[in-house]
Amino acid sequence: MTRLVAVLGYSDRSTAELHPVCNARVTRATAEARPDDVVLLSGWARGRASSAEADLMAACWTTPARELLLDPKARTTLGNAVAIARAARRLDADEVVLVTSSWHAKRAGVLARAALLRSKTTLRVVTADDRPSPTRRMREAASWLVVPVLAVAAARIR
Image (cartoon, rainbow, N blue to C red):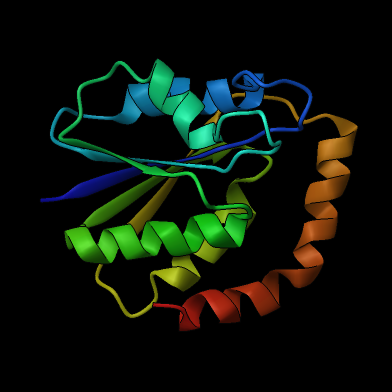
């Protein structure tokens, strides 16, 4: 059985270091990951001088894994979902464990499920225990306006 643990990055551009929200996701992922899992760390660099979120997560990843994959190009939740589905197909993964924040989990799960459509890969979403700020809550709520369109797009991308 091949299992892919996918950790979604997060940054609000307030620091060049790993954002606490992203760090909480990595911490949750380390609790989930097994030595025979493939781990995908996904997230881009928010500024010219900063490192990609995927690279920052990799620098602090200490849990044994069969393979550590980095996706420093994913800029959106849709980009994360597509990268997860492509990795899952390439690995012929039986299960994807998607790790994100509680306030982001439903939207990320919908898009990842859409991207995994017509595959036999199951998806399980696990969350870091974090409380969203009012700004994050409002941004997340607004993001749902485009989820139906993005889900259709995710289902079509291979």
